[in-house]
Length: 465
Image 1 (cartoon, rainbow, N blue to C red):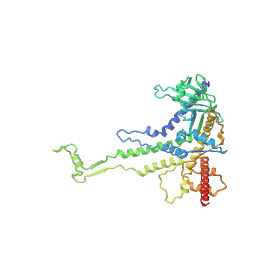
Image 2 (cartoon, rainbow, N blue to C red):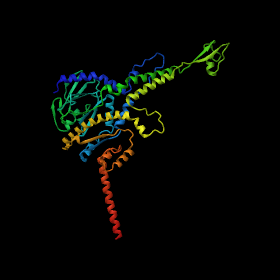
Image 3 (cartoon, rainbow, N blue to C red):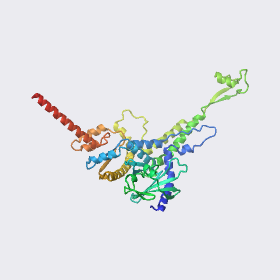
Image 4 (cartoon, helix red, strand yellow):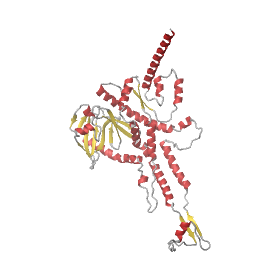
């Protein structure tokens, strides 16, 4: 059993960081301090205008990074391993990688917990610092992984924890920072109710180690990490103040206009009777509103609308400055900006350099996690199907969903004819996600064409004879 004092320290560290991560999630959801702490004025317009740039930038980067499928190739040219990868990821959700990228961008770190589901299939669960804690040594090796969860519809909100180590998966109930060992029921293990991560031990037929622990058949902590950077490097940290300022100023401007949507009419040197009613029960004010005209008695009388002068240029410049700074700090571009009509494709691509560099960092973090994913997949295949693959043989390529000039790339490949392998050339094209399969299809088509040409030639010779 794990040292309970160690688990206690892990929970204390988790609780200490939780507030920051909750704020990061809150800002992604648009629940900013500007919206929650907006100063209300009695009997005045108090509209709160939400404009969520942080969510926009996170979603954009996730789409840029994982909008295309991940490409796997075998460095040794083994087609079977690529096909097994494709087959064993086939049941995964199409947007799994995109969701993993999105969660890692919100917190600048996310986790992928690997397990074998009730159908005996290799699967994974995306976890975040909101519900998980990971402990690593000085060399980056994972010592243990804790996933906290609660049962649905549990009014008491009892907190549970699954603790993954190299050898075991242990189950606890948690109150504060105190861990109490529990024995999960068989139904919970097989169905993977709320924790959804312990069922594979029964699938493999390996019994529990003790009352509160199961065997970890992977012999390693089954978790991958997407670490993009520190919290201070996140979009939340960079844009929080600008986001609050933008929403506050935008809300103030909207309310300023709303407060004066009913204009005030000022009378000079005269008085309008709004109390005495005529035979029709109408006052002078009622008649004025009805007819749209008024008769001002005496001399030097006048009536004018009272209008508040607002320096709209100052307000607009403030909003434009805040918006521009958010785009600059996030390395994103404003696609609504008007461009010169004769802008070249190279110039358009240059506008994306900053975003591409940022996405490259995100993609590298995702590839590191996918390497770990393949490592556990191959361990699963070794246990289940006795197949022995080396994850280091697999080359992983993620093509950003940024406009690419495939025509230019095709011309480069054709000019390098004889100096570049077909496999490497096909891997450079954005619309080819499996070069090995593409080469296989080319060979089959060439063989079919060769057979067809041979049959046609023989038929033509026979007819001539």
